[in-house]
Amino acid sequence: MTEPLRIALVGLGFGAEFIPIYQAHRHAELVAVAQRDSERLRRVADQFGVPKRFSDFAALLAEPEIDAVHISTPIALYAEQTVAALEAGKPVAGTVPMATTLEDCRAIVTAARRSGRTYMMMETAVYTREFLHVRDLVEDGTIGRIQFLRGAHHQEMAGWPGYWEGLPPMHYATHAVAPVLALAGGLADSVMCLGSGRVSDELAPRYGSPFAVETALMTLGGSPVRAEAARSLFETAHEYVESFTVFGDRATFEWEQTAGAGHVLHVGEKPQRLTVPDFAHRLPPEIARFTTRGVYDEDNQHLSFAQGDGHGGSHPHLAHEFVSSRAGRRPPAVDATAAANWTAVGICAHESALRGGERIEIPDFTG
Image 1 (tube, rainbow, N blue to C red):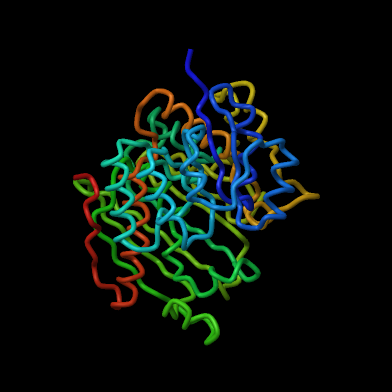
Image 2: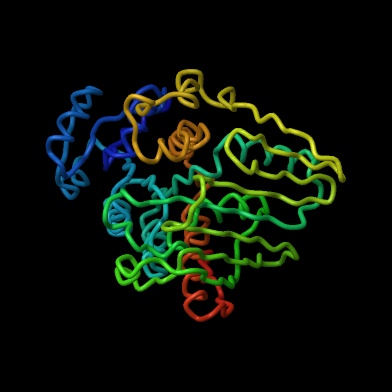
């Protein structure tokens, strides 16, 4: 019988959503939580009955009763904490993006390989109902030969913590990049990107990024297929959306234009409304309910849920993949190599935009 994976969850904002999922999973045990804010740490740990509480990350890593770490902390801390956890022998599940520099992406990949420990990027966009359904349509031949893919993530982040202010749009692009590359079945090898519009003088100096919108075109190694991704973060009026569209020779899946309008499957030249099912049946019964409920609801909201509509039921799928890959001693679906590539697309895309659309080669993280 497999011993439960003893997990510590670091960061109790968005990360708190995963506490009851790990607590319910038959092969996991949520043994600790960590948070710099001592009052929030006490409140959340008491609410869920978590026995171990840490405000110091190094002390958490030194705890022998913790097998693995799920990191959901501010974006600037991801890489340092991930490398430290891997070097301490702890498998890591990390929220997106993997990092904001190519050097940090490489450092995480290297730490994962040297330590022999699992790294998984918890990319919600490749476990939503829509993604799982369209992946089935690709695999069963309904879509046919993929001809082109388009991803987009438009989100107004005014009111989020200050470290987001002025962030280059493509530095947080994995929700738009990941689904198109995953459906295409390959890694990007180059990107060209154009920046468009301007953000205010208050936002632009923080990261030296003037653009309101960035749009990238990716090439995939050894493939004639191309993929596009568009991203905006501030001062661009649009309903929140994380979306993808897949053009095939037999059918095209098109994301709905506004929330609730309905997704469309174009079969030949005939569009038809597409019903997307839930995929709770693919999960262990004890966590299946979490595709439609969690810590956050209408009365207790987090910005990622108020805007993102629960990330398409993805959270229990992500937790289950991390736990089961670790238990089965196999790489997770979104391993360090895939995560680095998906993240590097955005980093290189922003560099391309600063250079007026110059083509930038994506580093090879496979070796």
